Length: 480
Image (tube, rainbow, N blue to C red):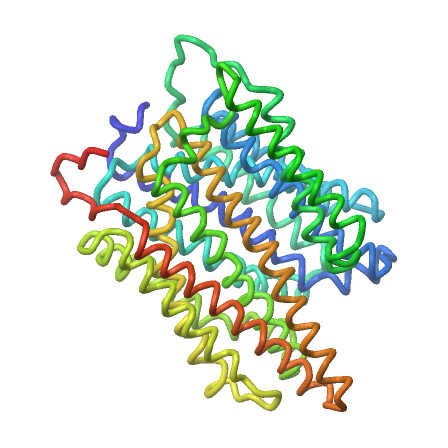
C-alpha cells in the first residue's frame, strides 16, 4: 500500500512504529553509560579500553549516516530500514551475550552501523507518510521529542535495568522491541515505489565520504585521550579533510553522484545543518555535563540523575506536540526555532551559575525546565527546515545529512566543551580550590560556552531560514 492510500489510523500506527525503532537507537547512545562500571568489573576492562564500549558505537553511527541515507534513496527506504533494524537487533543480542572485551566492542560497532541506517531512513519515511501541512508538523513534533528526550530517558532506564538485573539487560531489552518493530514495519510501512531504472551507487564517493566521516569522528572522540595538538589527532583530521576534498571533486564529475553538490546550495538545508551542529553542541553540554555535575558535584546516584531529567522530558513531550506544532502552523519555522534555541541558551546560562553546594529546586530545576521547553520547541522546526526543499528521491540523503550534522556537532561540541571544563577545573585545583568547587567552576564555563552555541544557532535560524508556515488542512501545499 502506498502512503497516499493509507487510512489515517494506519498512517499513525506506522509512524508510531518508526518512532519506537528510532527511540531504541537514541536510547542506546546513552543507556550504556550507567552500566560502564559494572561492565568494566565483569569483563576486566582497563579504563582506556572501557571508553570504546561507547566510542565503537559512536564511530560507526556517525561514519555511516550519510551512506545509509543515500542507500535508502537508491534501494528503497522500507527495505533499508528493515535491514538496518535487523543488524541492530542481532548486534544487540551479541552485546548481551558477549563473554569478552573484543566481542562486546565489535558488537557495539555493528550496532552503530545498524543504528546509522535506521536513524538516517526513519526521518525520510516519516516525511513520506505525511504530506506538507499540520499533520506533518504534529508528526515531527512527536519525532522531535523522541530525538530530544531519548538520551535522558536512556540514563533513567539504564539505571533501572542495571539495578534490577545486570548490565546485559540494557542490550537484551532491544531484542523483543526490535522483533516487534520489524514485524509491525513489514505490515504497516508503505511499500517502496517501483523503480523503472536502478540507480547505481557512486562507490568512489561512498568510500571517500564514509572514510572522511569515520576518521573525523575517531579524531574527535579520541582527541581528549590522544591530545588535541597531538600528531595522531591532527593527522586524522588532515586525512579526513583530504578525503572530503576528494569526495567533492568526485561528486563534481560523477554522472550519478552520491550527494549532488547542488543539494548543498539549498539555503534551508544548509542553514538547518549549521543550526543542527551548534544546537547539538549545546544539547550535549546540557545533557552530559549536567549529568556529571549532578553526579560528581552534588553526589547523585545514577537513578537520581535520571529522575532529575524527568521534568525536562515531560516539558519536552508536551511542547513538542501541542505548543511547538501550533507555533509552526501559525508562524512558520524560523521564529519558533529561534525562540526555542533562545530558551535553551537561557537555561544553559542559568546552569553556568550552579554552585558546588547547589540546590535542585533553585539551581537545577529552573534550568532543566527552560532547556526542556527549548528542546521541545526547536527539534520539530529544525527537522522540518532540513527537509523542506528537498525532492522525495533525495529525502534519505537529506535525512542522513541532518543526522550527521547532529552527530558531528554533538561529538565535536562535547569534546571542546569538556576540554573547556577540564582546563577551568585544572586551573582552580592548581590555585588551591577544593575538588567540588573546581569541578563546578569547570562545568559552569562549559555551560556558558554551550549557551553561546545555542544563541548563535538562534541567530542563524532567524536570519537565514526562509520557510513559510505550512498550509492549513486541505489547502494546496506551497510551491518551493
